[in-house]
Image 1: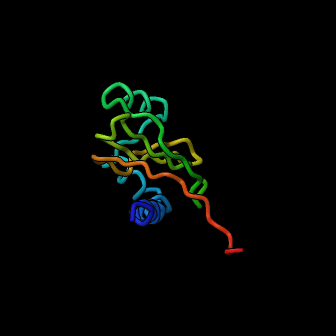
Image 2 (image 1 turned 90 degrees about the vertical axis):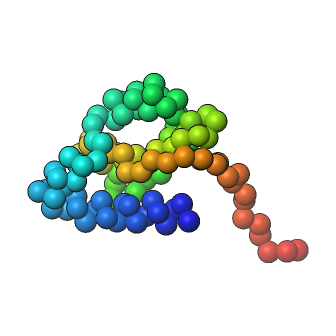
Length: 106
């Protein structure tokens, strides 16, 4: 479910980012800044650290930050042009263990 939410956010952001005027309006509504500044804010204010990272189809780097106790989380994207924006925030982050796919039974 989380991946569907993130994917929907990325698709919506991609449509907006394709039009420079709309992208500027969207950035004004979102929290966009230099990546290092957003990281510093998340760590200092919410004690959030990187929890997951992935490369989006548009070339952006999608990152999930979460507090150590899981009380808060933030999804951030850094686009190829260097702009970083927080896409979503929330509470009660729970990291799930990665389970390797099992091959066919012997």
